[in-house]
Length: 388
Ligand SMILES: *Cc1c(COP(=O)(O)O)cnc(C)c1O
Image 1 (cartoon, rainbow, N blue to C red):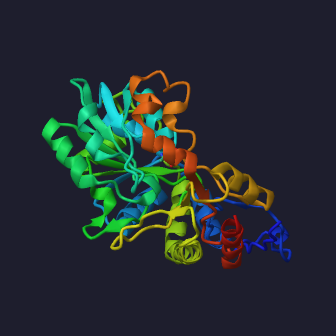
Image 2 (image 1 turned 180 degrees about the vertical axis):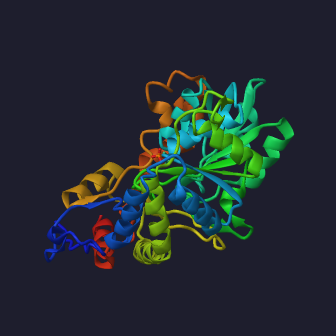
């Protein structure tokens, strides 16, 4: 068993400070700011009694987050899944939506909750995101949109996707749940497509316990999304759509304001963890690492490895070996979404149409990756992997 002394930065709970705790290492451990900083926000909320419905912290977080991300317009949400459901409503998406089987189930659950038909297309073996070359042959007269995922925060081939969307008159909604803070040479990758949806779930690189946001191109679209996330209310007596309750509350928003100030520090730690993994795992026979484009400002959200045929153990053998040592790596994404009972009846869900996604799902293992992961634990994990 690998012994880990995890430090609890800024946590005033005395129990957690006792020397070192020996505990398993999970794939994610949420970064948290010093509790005192959040308590002063709680005091303000207690005084104002504004708990939700787009109060002052909501307004502040929305503004500061847009600035931080380098986008013009965004609407905060209670979580990413409701953000996805609402994004599809906002664009009045209908019929068939082309998407990826290699993602978290929320991506396509959002389609079923809107009565839409997912059409699965295989992934690119390098980016692990939807393969644009396969999109055209999946288009039918009922196709209205494409729902790609920036898997692990690596941008999709957005130029190729947009080209197809423009030719066929399709909308593009990005599930950008992994893409917080990612920038390419043109700026935030959240600028792509018609809408992008973020998640601030506790397991993501930036979190508000639960939370999410839709990034949209103009104030008019944001207005419509803001109506939709508040039951469709445009004013006290006017309801313009069958909206949902998707509002982020003041506690989440206040936490977001505080956490955003610390994101730079956490990002630097994640970068150090990721680089150490890369140094130690490069050249280990049978282990393939994620391809990160050189000029990308990435967020180090995940550290996936592919356990290839040249490795002495199978992926699952390695997964269980690490577990026995207290290292809880995760098989993200396995099984494929298209293998679950509510999807496998669709023609496009047949595994013979999705050979690359199938192969990656059987080889992938996401190693622990979070800001407070000690470098010596990274080294121990790499030793275990290298010895086979
Ligand atoms: C986390 C995640 C979601 C869902 O976000 P929640 O905020 O947990 O509802 C959607 N899609 C992907 C790819 C995710 O990883």
